[in-house]
Length: 496
Image (cartoon, rainbow, N blue to C red; front, top):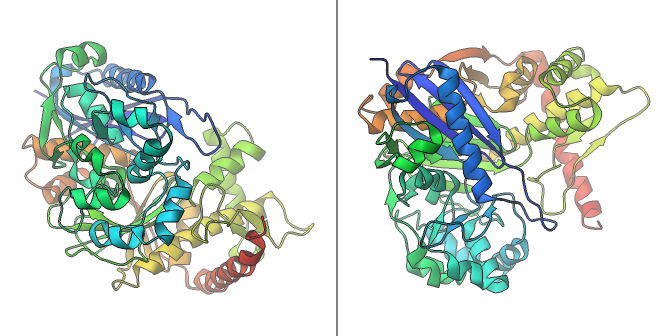
């Protein structure tokens, strides 16, 4: 009998399902969208009922597209965006809309925590930064502004843990996801009531679910879920993992010999370490899915979503052909022929709270192609900025595995190689979130005995890019200019 694994990947608005065989071949994929709700500036939510309808629809569709029997799916697991929060009441119903990790309503609370000593006290336990989209900040905001929401909530779940709950009826946290929320004493790998008291949310301690491992079987498809998804009742569901873990392990990051960069909405740059890295200048240290490792991460929302904005606003409808047009235009301009600087801060920044995006150095000679090359370069510079911060804590390896939307562009990957002065490797699988999830499902059901064995069989390198010495010299000058522009604009940004 043929055996398959199902992975589910849930972003802020898109839910994807994919079916793989045990050699990592992608049999079929399907996706469904949940509209974002923005009731006020800075609020990003989605309807939890419409969300699960989208998930179930994507599962039904992928099983149909794959043309397989549901009993041939031997296990499944999910990944999803980290942070934000999904609250359910004591009957499993939504206690509020899902709040997405890009939500900014708690920004002032976070600012106060950085100035009043809260961050410093908490950091000794969380060993990570705090930001507005984390559940610690969101819980505090609701306690101050809408306490009935917190009173109704019986369990505080992350995105993919809510998905697993819908499929199994079992409410658990999972170790990699919960370790990035500010709710866990990451240093000691446990819940800590004292930590929640530091944030002023100690009364929510009992709302935190039991923690499970990424590969641990956390339940089985219920009769109701089977009817709604087309899955076979009783199919095992593994714990799954935080999406930044999923993308890393799906590119074969199972030891500390390689870096991983995810070039999607966020510029996510990470490596794994056998010891936690503790620094208040580091974005996040969390727990990795491979036992014995920590995930060390530097990130900001400054990556390929900048191109999506440009295409949507200035080229066409955002179709695939538009992105191919962009690649062709960028390839037609050499690094030496473009002196425009782009700051990729449309949706976030690594340059301070007031920084905004922009093109600088424009004159009448410049074309759309010059602007696009500047955009590609600016995104690569942002990744370099974060990777250099990681380099303060270890000697950096010479290979970077890149995933995300930018990895589909060969010209962009060559720019990455030249800007970073490192070998860039891109894997053959396009849906790394779902692949990372099925690795957990396969291990959890004994199809593989470790991540090492699973990735050796399922992860394959499709292309690689070496830095070109001449371009490297050009980009060294450009990167220094990029940093000087940021420093020069800081006094201006403060006046906005």
